Length: 231
Figure (tube, rainbow, N blue to C red):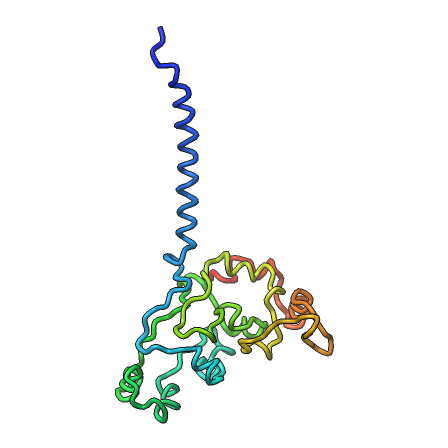
């Protein structure tokens, strides 16, 4: 006597295989959400006490990164400029602009502006600006076209896979130290080679390999070790 309908086996197989695909889809969806701007804040402009434009100050006025980020070459933290740095100029220009009133109020009361961190790494990640600067990593390698941002946003995901892309092959990104703060650095080309120690380089990989030796980068195994970033 047949208890179950003949289609039961087919339904059972379809249900099992369907469950596998559903579980796989759920994991895929979770991975996509984890990489999305909803989680990483990539490309998201965060509210600030005053609307600071890197495009205006860097591209328009030609102000060097180090004028405001004074500790970027010798500290793990790039530094947030004190209000006095802003007032070096704005005590003379745009003195009555309404959008700069928070800056003037901060200067009058000696209370720091509460800027919102745009590029924020988790507490369990160790990052040192100075080591990257001194090894030839340009500002816009990580911060993107910040010189063209009317309002600052996070350029990259800042997730581990993004960091490891560089740590596994730093030669793809290294540049001469004197070009680190050049937002328009084009990289080497056959038409416009980069000269280092009297030798011309016409492509990025050969230049990067030479700079790895010149700047004494640690081995790939070292800089991809867990303890390098998680201390």
